[in-house]
Image 1 (cartoon, helix red, strand yellow):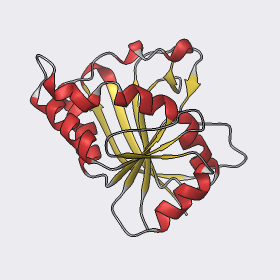
Image 2 (cartoon, one colour):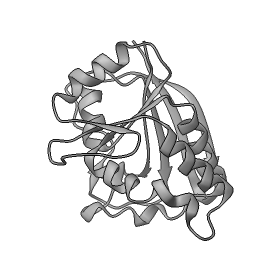
Image 3 (tube, helix red, strand yellow):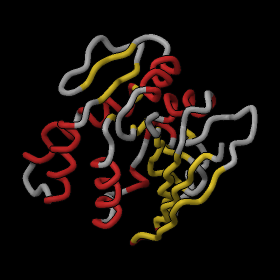
Length: 188
């Protein structure tokens, strides 16, 4: 059975985006934090995206390594992004390109099926998609990179839940700029 990991940058008050899908509060990550995310992505065998995050990522990463001034880490992330298989969940887009396939049906059923397969870990991104997987009890690990900013409202990292989810701390680390990364496993 595969491990499903949900991780994103978020504000200290728990939002992945401020109103209007504004992520300007996160600024460019430190080299150390970017490397940490790159290592996590390189360990992933499959990435699951909701529509909004897919549109953000697919508008930049396919050619990011060809941009003037691209760092070695950005180039490595771009290559890894292109090479890693992706599943995009959306009922509003018609097609995806590159190393991705589109699922327009029941996301929870498809994620359950993918988790049951043999293979390496999967990352899930996008608060709405991850929220559905969380409510279904499918997420095994949470990675939170909390930035020292409060935005007051926006898109929350966690959805409203019907019951508690008990977690075990796996890792905590502080990065330049006061970003605190924590990684938790779901206790079953």
